Length: 357
Image 1 (cartoon, rainbow, N blue to C red):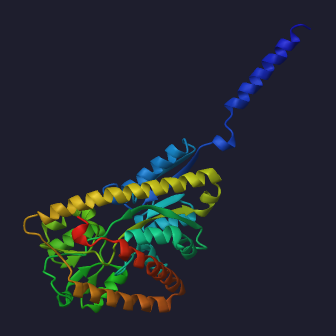
Image 2: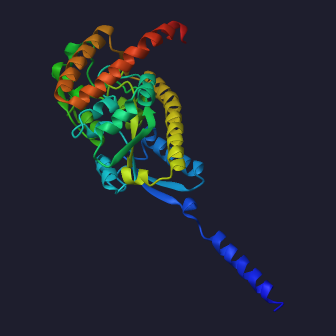
């Protein structure tokens, strides 16, 4: 009889240790399969996605792990949206401009049209001007949730060319590689628009299949070596002043996530986007300095008259799309109204260039 309390005590201890050793649902690891639309060789596009995944694991103490893969590793780069929608991927890090064939208004979230939003305007509109709600409305019914951008690119180069472009008349007959609304604008200037995948742009320029192209930011373009075969680089990239990088999550995967982890995912996105912006500012400046000192390369800016006409044509094309697509019209009006609200103040506080050095 005297040994009974000891046996009971030992049983209680064993039971307690067993309970402690069994992980509770709250501490079980959640593993998401993710993919970018971009290769690891494009740091401004892939590195922010990789940073975001690492930051999520750190902030959640390993409760949520995102196994991020480069473009093409799991599904083709152009199929990321469909893969997230189907649940093949839990999360995709991509760019809205890829889906304009299915969702015409996606070009507005890609900011790929003449006189699009500047970076500060775009971020302000996304976070405080209703942009996130409209982004999710665009994809409603496709089992996809849009989260804030995982990164943001700065202004693209306007174009690389083997021929001088000193006036808008120089676009006539020019074989120009581009896509989307900007391509439609160039056609009205007389250019012959050619659509090519990224890997074919350099050899096509080299062989004379195309005369000019737009591709990416200075830091991206320098890796492709366009300066080796083009004599002219034109700025600024009025056709894409900045580019938010799109974060897509499978709806079921997102809804299954505990609320505290959802918050940490959004915090990680803000961090990765901020880091992408600050890194890009330095990297683009360094690349442009390299271009300006590259022997045989002429770097110049569009004239104000050229910019004014491009904006006029761009507004004309945008208005036509708005008339034909209600969602396009709704998003574009929202962006215009936001700019009309913030631009007067920005003009008051913006320093003229000579004083901003």
